[in-house]
Length: 256
Length: 280
Image 1 (cartoon, rainbow over the protein chains, first blue to last red):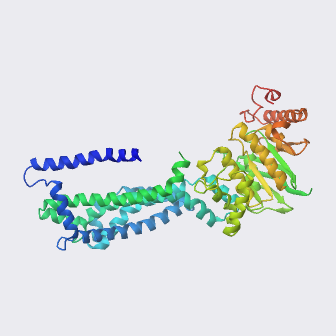
Image 2: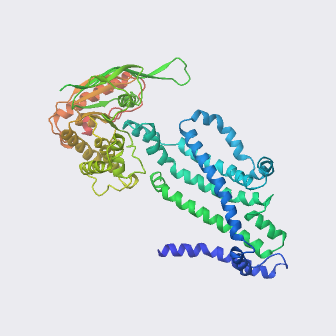
Image 3: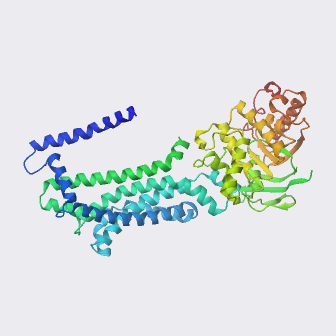
């Protein structure tokens, strides 16, 4: 326990130092370029709950879009990943180069194209989030499904397990930790994407909020929303890391 | 005792890398009959098709020619009347000892309460009480091995097949495991086909030793082991009868090795410089 506290304290030092430097630097920075955290943080907190600013509401809007796009990508990516990695390996080999190209397409460059097809409201944002989440989720699951330990499948089959039982009791638990790895990677890019997507052609959401504070030259809330968005991303990442760890225990231990 | 397993003229080939029409025969014309309740060990040079044979016996692979009869009936696919302990145990790492042991019972469709009762029994049998809720990675090699054996015993197959099950455990554990296996076999009366590299193990455990030759894999000779039962592998190997049988199998294997083309040193005690009598 003591060692744990020590570790937390030690890793907190750079973060505290960063805020101290920010606070200190703001006093010397040219006027109108930087606000110190002691004014940014309270302003952001009050914006979160104020009726006028409605930062909380914008958060919900963005999270809703992330949820829809991410959820859709999780469903499609994992299903495809399982199927292509196990029963449709030839199809997978055929599709792989195409997937690699899709994966490498710069999603920010796709924003205007998606606007042409999906308009400029929620549908387009959701589609963009779906697109960026799909590839890491699909690839991670598919790779894991491909690498299922053959001897475990043999063992199950030798005990008379049919295909469904093999899938449910061997392939699925084998791949599950990687599913969460994929979801974690997906959630990370989803956050990048939603802010970028809401920066263009939008009238709601965190990206829009941030750009509007920029336009209004509200430095407190401009810095505040960057900080706030970062915190949200950390929180989401934490949730998936915990889930991944929970299901990864046997794997890290078994293949140590 | 009636015949339990009849292996009749089994052949299985694979296409050679590069060559189109050329086939490599892992097994050719392999025949062997195993009686009910018998303990048969199979030894042979590496690459003689032992693993291919087991795949065919479980039903994970189909032969090119020949057939396998069990109780006079040809086998289809894998079935719960045969169980195999695979090389490297192949335990499910996300399942506890109990979960692993209950796998075959789940396939059999046995309700949860009885599954638990049965797994309890086998956990006791292989001496893993107190480790029911441990995961494979928390166990020693010998304990993993016992879990793998209990997993097969639990669904009560009439035929037990083992593919070099004790290859990866240390010498002392191996001896303990061999004796445990013998006592389990004596208690349950199962028919056992046991594949091994070790002549000592083959002779020490078996009623009969089938010596295989390589390319193509065939039964070269069957050696009857008329050592008294019940046995302890550790004590019996000092008897002159054991030494004589050991030497017999050793010679057969050496010939198999020589007739089977290049020596890649597959057999313990054969390709080495030490005479087998010095080992035991």
